[in-house]
Image (cartoon, rainbow, N blue to C red; front, side, top):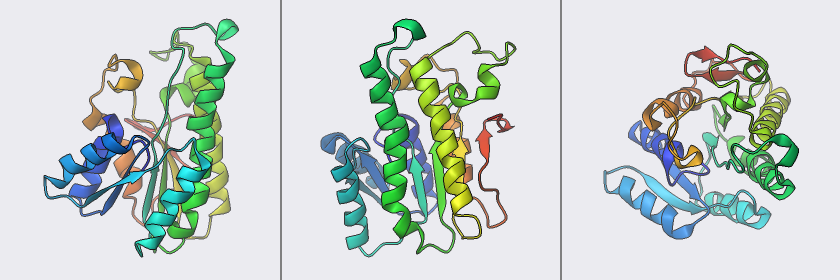
Length: 234
């Protein structure tokens, strides 16, 4: 999984490993990834650090090649890596470089990682792809004045996550009829470094919808958007 050395990603890695999965813990910082994997390995969990910077095509290809060389199939891919820049900045003055950076990681990184690891997922009897989105990526929430976070307006982040939702739907449509299911998870407003720990949910709570989609049974959905309280509006 990507972006797994801290926050929600780290918790998802811990839970999946505790349920018997052999986890490749992806992180763009080698030292932090190794430290995170070491903490979980010390608990007796099967976790291996994987250098993986989703914004770097070569890094993604090297990561996929390493997993392939290990003789592994891939049952679960969690696209968790993400950034939120310029929070609180009005759309009319949000820096274009910050917008590009968010799209590069939140959207293009998700696409390139899924494309690179899809050949390994095709060897699985029940492949699962989970794309981690946000309340901000839901057009339904963003256009509902009754939504608790309606007044938040992080244009670049919200747009990149909404686009990622569309990407998930496209992959789900392509892979219909195969054992691979592609779904979107909304962890809710979780307290992490991404939002300077202003969120109201714990990382344990935020991990729940992601793990649920990662461990879907054969009769589970594909092309769905699941949040803390069930299906989310697109």
